[in-house]
Image (cartoon, rainbow, N blue to C red):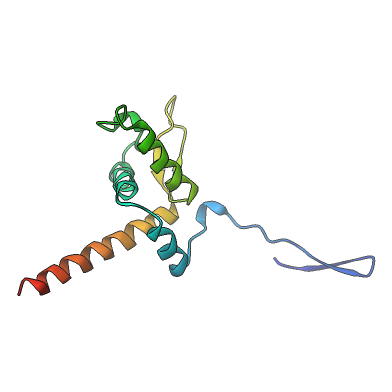
Length: 125
Protein backbone atom coordinates (compact mmCIF):
# COMPACT_ATOMS: atom_id res chain seq x y z
CA UNK A 1 0.00 0.00 0.00
CA UNK A 2 2.96 2.29 -0.40
CA UNK A 3 1.45 4.53 -3.09
CA UNK A 4 2.62 7.83 -4.50
CA UNK A 5 0.26 10.80 -4.43
CA UNK A 6 0.58 13.98 -6.46
CA UNK A 7 -0.42 17.17 -4.70
CA UNK A 8 0.04 20.48 -6.47
CA UNK A 9 2.66 19.01 -8.76
CA UNK A 10 4.74 17.62 -5.86
CA UNK A 11 5.22 13.92 -5.35
CA UNK A 12 4.27 12.87 -1.84
CA UNK A 13 4.83 9.37 -0.52
CA UNK A 14 2.08 7.76 1.46
CA UNK A 15 3.35 6.25 4.69
CA UNK A 16 2.77 2.55 5.17
CA UNK A 17 1.98 1.62 8.74
CA UNK A 18 2.90 -1.75 10.16
CA UNK A 19 1.69 -3.53 13.26
CA UNK A 20 4.45 -2.94 15.81
CA UNK A 21 3.25 -5.90 17.85
CA UNK A 22 4.44 -8.18 15.05
CA UNK A 23 7.69 -6.36 14.25
CA UNK A 24 10.70 -8.69 14.34
CA UNK A 25 14.38 -7.79 14.54
CA UNK A 26 16.76 -8.92 11.85
CA UNK A 27 19.52 -11.21 13.10
CA UNK A 28 22.25 -8.54 13.33
CA UNK A 29 20.06 -6.21 15.41
CA UNK A 30 19.06 -9.10 17.65
CA UNK A 31 22.72 -9.99 18.26
CA UNK A 32 23.57 -6.35 18.96
CA UNK A 33 20.78 -5.97 21.53
CA UNK A 34 21.58 -9.33 23.13
CA UNK A 35 25.20 -8.28 23.68
CA UNK A 36 23.91 -5.27 25.64
CA UNK A 37 22.20 -7.52 28.20
CA UNK A 38 24.09 -8.49 31.35
CA UNK A 39 23.64 -11.93 32.97
CA UNK A 40 21.21 -10.57 35.61
CA UNK A 41 18.95 -9.05 32.95
CA UNK A 42 19.04 -12.30 30.99
CA UNK A 43 18.01 -14.18 34.15
CA UNK A 44 15.07 -11.77 34.55
CA UNK A 45 14.12 -12.40 30.93
CA UNK A 46 14.21 -16.16 31.53
CA UNK A 47 11.81 -15.70 34.48
CA UNK A 48 9.33 -13.96 32.16
CA UNK A 49 9.74 -16.71 29.55
CA UNK A 50 8.93 -19.39 32.15
CA UNK A 51 5.71 -17.60 33.18
CA UNK A 52 4.72 -16.53 29.65
CA UNK A 53 2.22 -19.33 29.01
CA UNK A 54 0.49 -18.89 32.37
CA UNK A 55 -0.65 -15.55 33.74
CA UNK A 56 2.62 -13.74 33.07
CA UNK A 57 5.13 -12.57 35.65
CA UNK A 58 4.57 -9.78 38.13
CA UNK A 59 7.61 -8.42 39.90
CA UNK A 60 6.10 -9.21 43.29
CA UNK A 61 6.24 -12.93 42.41
CA UNK A 62 10.03 -12.73 42.37
CA UNK A 63 11.48 -14.17 45.56
CA UNK A 64 13.95 -11.41 46.48
CA UNK A 65 12.32 -8.52 44.60
CA UNK A 66 12.00 -6.22 47.64
CA UNK A 67 15.66 -6.50 48.64
CA UNK A 68 16.94 -5.90 45.06
CA UNK A 69 14.13 -3.73 43.74
CA UNK A 70 16.28 -1.18 41.91
CA UNK A 71 18.25 -3.88 40.13
CA UNK A 72 15.11 -5.74 39.03
CA UNK A 73 13.39 -2.52 37.96
CA UNK A 74 16.39 -1.56 35.82
CA UNK A 75 16.52 -5.01 34.20
CA UNK A 76 12.82 -5.00 33.39
CA UNK A 77 13.03 -1.46 32.04
CA UNK A 78 15.87 -2.48 29.69
CA UNK A 79 13.97 -5.56 28.47
CA UNK A 80 10.79 -3.56 27.95
CA UNK A 81 12.65 -0.72 26.23
CA UNK A 82 14.31 -3.11 23.80
CA UNK A 83 10.92 -4.64 23.02
CA UNK A 84 11.56 -8.12 24.40
CA UNK A 85 8.82 -7.99 27.05
CA UNK A 86 5.62 -6.02 27.57
CA UNK A 87 3.08 -5.35 30.30
CA UNK A 88 -0.52 -6.40 29.76
CA UNK A 89 -3.49 -5.64 31.95
CA UNK A 90 -4.85 -8.80 33.55
CA UNK A 91 -7.50 -7.71 36.02
CA UNK A 92 -5.89 -5.37 38.50
CA UNK A 93 -2.39 -6.68 37.77
CA UNK A 94 -0.02 -5.78 34.94
CA UNK A 95 2.20 -8.82 34.47
CA UNK A 96 5.02 -9.08 31.96
CA UNK A 97 4.79 -11.26 28.87
CA UNK A 98 7.25 -12.10 26.11
CA UNK A 99 6.78 -10.30 22.77
CA UNK A 100 7.47 -11.62 19.28
CA UNK A 101 10.95 -10.08 19.58
CA UNK A 102 11.30 -11.75 22.97
CA UNK A 103 10.62 -15.11 21.36
CA UNK A 104 13.46 -14.33 18.95
CA UNK A 105 15.75 -13.59 21.91
CA UNK A 106 14.66 -16.79 23.68
CA UNK A 107 15.56 -18.79 20.58
CA UNK A 108 18.95 -17.08 20.37
CA UNK A 109 19.65 -17.77 24.05
CA UNK A 110 18.72 -21.45 23.59
CA UNK A 111 21.12 -21.66 20.64
CA UNK A 112 23.89 -20.00 22.70
CA UNK A 113 23.30 -22.43 25.57
CA UNK A 114 23.34 -25.43 23.21
CA UNK A 115 26.57 -24.22 21.61
CA UNK A 116 28.16 -23.66 25.03
CA UNK A 117 27.22 -27.21 26.09
CA UNK A 118 28.65 -28.63 22.86
CA UNK A 119 31.90 -26.75 23.45
CA UNK A 120 32.11 -28.13 27.00
CA UNK A 121 31.52 -31.66 25.69
CA UNK A 122 34.30 -31.25 23.14
CA UNK A 123 36.70 -29.92 25.79
CA UNK A 124 35.84 -32.85 28.08
CA UNK A 125 36.92 -35.45 25.52
